Length: 265
Picture 1 (cartoon, rainbow, N blue to C red):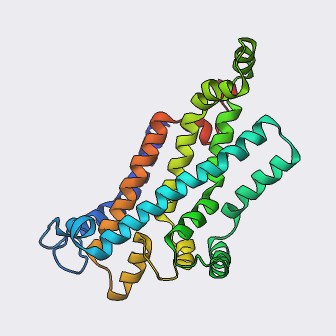
Picture 2 (tube, one colour):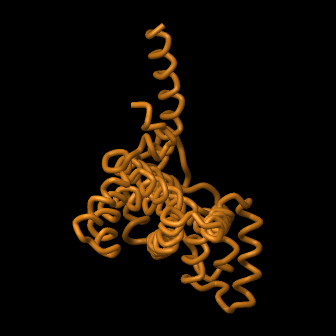
Picture 3 (spheres, rainbow, N blue to C red):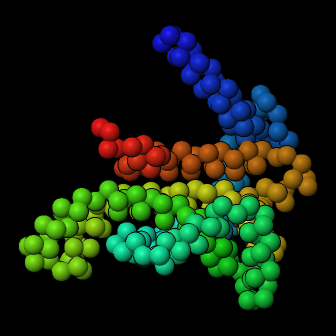
């Protein structure tokens, strides 16, 4: 039985890795077309994507700005809602938490079209800051969930002990709540970062062709066919995702974040 399980996992890993190998090989082509195995392998396309080609370097910089800005804003918006929900549990706090999670449940194309109309009336259509806010609202449910899980994992006895020692609510928040929820906050930040970096639909509507992220630039470049630089962009997406989720697995409480019941240990 163990042999069959190992065989199944090995086949699954092989099937998942083959497309990655093809994409990595296609990025090494020296010409403007993608072939596998690559013809005249070179690292020139990586230099174009990260350094020398303004179209791609600008798109990469825009993607980084939007992703980091959206992740930061999403965490800042999610923290007070999650804390209020955890500390009071009032109906209003539950309503706010539900509203904060709702955009993530709406189909992206519906949300993107709605935001397109909204930013057109508000004067933010085509602005980079509007893309940051749009992604933050879209993905705020992720840090809202991770921070809530972190808050729920706090032992109330620690809070009572701090209060007994004369600590104020502000001191308890700074010395007990924040340190214990920091891994969950960072995890929520990273989740938003990765999804924002890879998101296409919403940014397509709110950018209004005024700027391009990497996903939009890939779409725009498809008019000229598939090029090895697109494969470099795909490798970048993959590398960022692997690094971020490896960090979450290393420093975050991944089993609890994935829904495992820690109380059964």
